[in-house]
Length: 296
Image 1: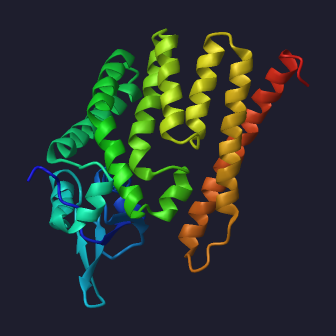
Image 2: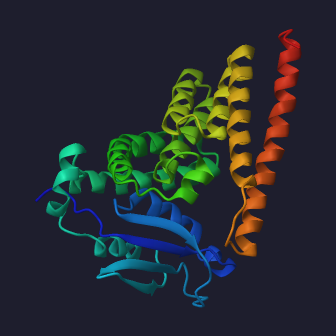
């Protein structure tokens, strides 16, 4: 059939030790989050003593009859990453009830999602090199190819309720859509650099919508657009929205982490401290704008 199979239940633990991070673990985790089919959870993992062979992914899968199997895969990136995802699939007929309630995720859509995601990486490279014209072109292609498949896939994930709680906590919206939100943000800033304020505004609004208003950087993009167009009130409102998002992030990372190791607690503290620093910086800008607008 044309419908892409749903994944069997599995947890992919991506090692985040210093060695695996140097080998590209963050990129691997981002790509797994973007492409993983319903039934797979992608989470951060600890060292599994395979240093030098990263990125390493430990796969915990349901073997049936109350058994859990665990295997470790080395160098999970590129074609090896796609092959890994393909291994954890089951016949979609078993999901008939779900399919009646959610759109079908076809092989064609899966291929478009992969193409869109890869184009977003090329766009990020152009953006980082400040080749804004090329970046805008690539982001447009990435969004055109990947947006619809990404949203359909996320709808199916939501129906299954398999979004990783830790990832939702980190971003405030589904981790599988992070690449799409980042594409809109970077496209916005590229267009601003090229003087296309109206196009930048559309991308900034899209970034806030697809992040469910939870991404502080998306609101900062909108504030930059408003500043460029001389809309001080709009800039102030966007800054306050960004501050609110950062406050929620701080609150999440203030919660106790029972059972977590020192590395996880240190990572949480860094996220919290970074959010606090950004909030202070944006707060100063907001106070200055309120003074200019005569609101303080």
